[in-house]
Length: 171
Image 1 (cartoon, helix red, strand yellow):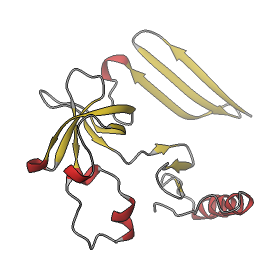
Image 2 (tube, one colour):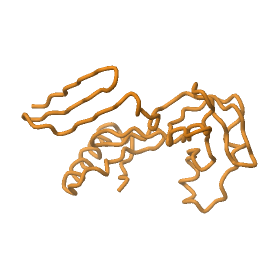
Image 3 (cartoon, helix red, strand yellow):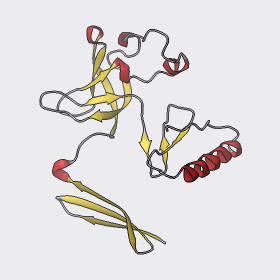
Image 4 (spheres, rainbow, N blue to C red):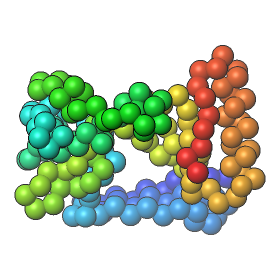
């Protein structure tokens, strides 16, 4: 039996996952320490800077966020195994373009947040990568047997779904 206990106050939120009377996970988020890392936004390209191979993206914060060409996901970059020259930023994004981005580094001082277009949503056991053709198994799973079981289950699900995705691990 599993319970999720939530305690909220204006200063902090606490969430505990309890299985058979024992706490399995405890998460505490304080409002003063809340960061943006992991947040996903629909942004708009404000400026493209070819000389810096970067762009500034408006995601609704006080300052525009920073997107470097290395953080722009491209399917062809993985197909070429990194042997091809990187595509210039001005060929990947343009001013006014809408992008779905994820914060990978919080804003500091006068610098805005750093972004990536590679979206990654980590669950307790799986990592969802919407742009990729696979679902990753969490690296937090220490047991090779459990990882193999999950891999087998996901492979079976992929077969039942008519090959809807390919399974790879991020180990």
